[in-house]
Image: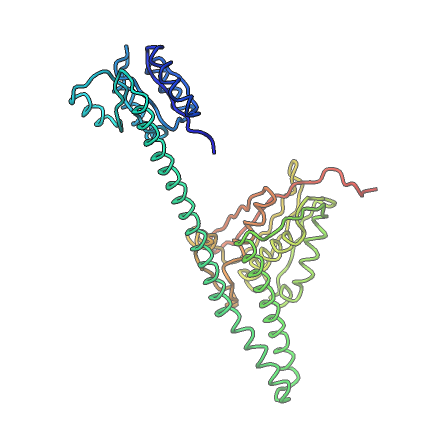
Length: 379
């Protein structure tokens, strides 16, 4: 631990030499200021543990210096001991009112000087340690509250959003085992159950990523990716969901664009944005996916012509501390986590999620990825 640092302020060099000789014997670190203006500058820039401040100085006396230091939040907590030859009680009271904590009188008595300095240095260090400890405790409490909120939200989402799909799967299996349904009805139920399974899978994947993100456990592994191929891979995995609602996908790609991104995170972002677009699109609606080069980035945009959303709803959905979700045009459920996860993942790549939406006209989601100008494995 570093020895305490003490600023000595006096216009008399002889007084400074005497005080320095006392303090050097105790291995205190010292600095000197010969006037009030210099003292204020040094205190602000070097933040001493204690200031010994002479009262009787020209231009700016010790009382005024003390007042200015106490008015500044950065230096207000530095303890100040006045140094004076004055013994008038009124001067001492005036000094205490200005913010001083003690007095040392001239001529100096070595043992008294060191005892007073030692006492106030220890008190200041203990106060500083208590403040730091309180800050750590506050930070810990905030983290605990955040962890509890994460746990409660996970349990709430699992309890509410998984019960329905799981029950659908159980009921279908029971009906199949009992051979109690016609072939056409069975096919319809099978498709409905497939959607339930896909929805449950998406929910679990979102919960897993979100939980890891909240705990700081996600690891970012960027690599060079062909953007169009990644989009098409996600579209292929969502083919039945898109076809079931009769959605027309319009692909507007500026072909051959490579970007640097974490593959898993990018696929989660694309799946969530596309699922969201399908969810809020009307039957036989249209979704446009655009991928274009934009300077040193590749911009991906997903637009729908669905129900859209108000600014108020958007703010609630993007608030990680608020559990909020809306049902789709077929009353599809959601966790309220999709856009939160998308924004967090996109920000990890150094980009931003830009959302434009208008009630009754649809929504537009855009984000940028760092472009790869030269592909090392290209021919």
